[in-house]
Image 1 (cartoon, rainbow, N blue to C red):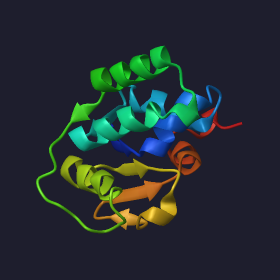
Image 2 (image 1 turned 45 degrees about the horizontal axis):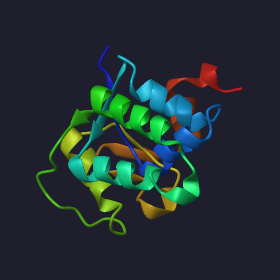
Image 3 (image 1 turned 180 degrees about the horizontal axis):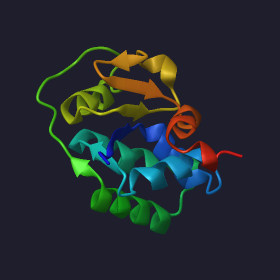
Image 4 (image 1 turned 180 degrees about the vertical axis):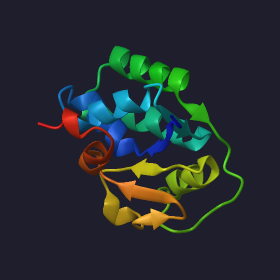
Length: 139
C-alpha cells in the first residue's frame, strides 16, 4: 500500500491540542500512522511552534513540547523548491509544501483560504478527510 501524502494546516494541529476527542486529533494520529506520510517545511514547523505557544490558547507547555516532538519524529521535512502565490500569505507555505511533497491532501479548517485543488493535492477539511480515509472512525 502506498502511504497517503499529507500536509496539515496549523489550525488542525491547534485543534488537536485543544480538543482531545475532536476529529482533528484523529487526523493528526492518522498522519503519524504507517499508512501516511506527513510533510512539513521549516516555516510550517516554526508556525506550529509559534501558534501553539500563544498564551490565549492556554496549551500547557508540556503538551506543546510533546506534540512538536511527535511531529518532528513522524513528519518528513521538505524544502519547497519554488514559491507559489495561490492564497493569502502565510498560507502559501502549506501549498508550497504540498507542491514539493506531491501531497494527496492538504487538511485545513480554513478551506476558504485555499483553492479546492493544487495540482494533484486536494484541499479538504478534517471531516472530509476522515470520510475518505477512515469512515469507520466517524460516529
